[in-house]
Length: 111
Image 1: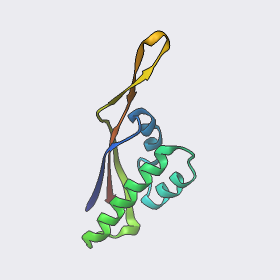
Image 2: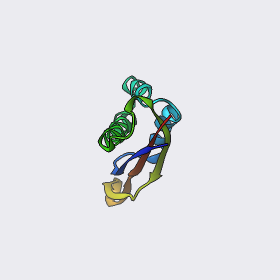
Image 3: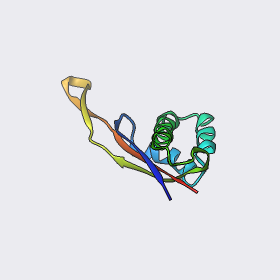
């Protein structure tokens, strides 16, 4: 069976939040996964739908894969590096603000 992949690195969202959205679409058909993400009111849904659309476009570009029979075989969400910022606090002190990033890999396979 033929498969198609897409990868997104260093997206500005925590991996735990993105994993909640990824659990909604694992194992679903690609088109129904896009429909589910379209009506999910989370920022991660928009990010994940872009990656799934990219994987569908990659499969279409290969030419040997039927796009209508694709399903989401695997969605991997990994933790990326953190960007550190400084937030001013009381009495001249400071606190670190951690901006988390994630890596997303989507693999579609033909049934």
